[in-house]
Image (tube, rainbow, N blue to C red; front, side, top):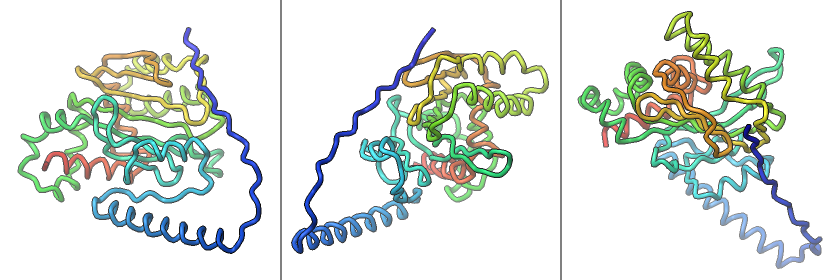
Length: 276
C-alpha cells in the first residue's frame, strides 16, 4: 500500500515594522506605480499572443502565490484560482490550455474543486493530424469540430494535470466523481458493457491517498493508448484502453467539457501548432 505525504512549509514570523514616514510612503507609491506598469505590459503581451490574461487574486492561498513564480509565463495561470501551470511539462509536452473544474452542492453553492492544464506532444499532433488538416487556415481549424474529435481518437501523447484547490476534498469524493463522469463517457463511446473497465480505473484511487490543497493528479495518454495515473508525483497505475483514454480526455476537450473556455483555448493552440 502506498501512502502519500505532502510536506508543509513553516511560515516565518515577521517582526512588527515601525509606522511609515514620508519617505517610506513615497517609496511605496513609486513601487506600486512600477508594478502597475509591469502588469499593464504583461496584459498587452498576453493579449497580443492570444493567451488568457492572468488576473490578480489577492485572496489566493500561499501555495498558489508560490506557484506563480515557478517559471510560469503569461497564459499559464488559471485566473479564478491563481494556479499556475508550466508552459512545458517535464515530458516536453506543451501546455494547450488551462481551466477549472467546479461542482455544486444541492444545486445552490458552487465549489471550485481543481484547476487543470491540458498538455500535448507537438510532434505527435503534427504527425497524426497535419496531413488531414494542413490545407486549412488557422481560423478554419479553430471552428472545425472534427479536429478535436480526431485528437480524442488518435494515438497522441497528452496529459491532463489537475491541481486541487478545494481544501476538504477526499480521495473517496474523487473516485465517486470519476465513476460518474468517466462512466457516462464510457457508455457514450463504448455502449453499456463498460462496467469492468470503469472499475479498473476508479480502483486506482485508493483510500490511503490523501489530497490536501495543492495536491497534483496527472492523467496521461501514453503511446499505444496507455492511460498512466500519477498522484503526488508517484505512478499508481496504468491501463491500456483506447476507449478509456478517449473518455477521460473528453471530459476536458469534448463536446460537453468541464470548462468551455479551456476547450476553446486548447483547440486554438492545436491549430497554431499545426500551422507552425
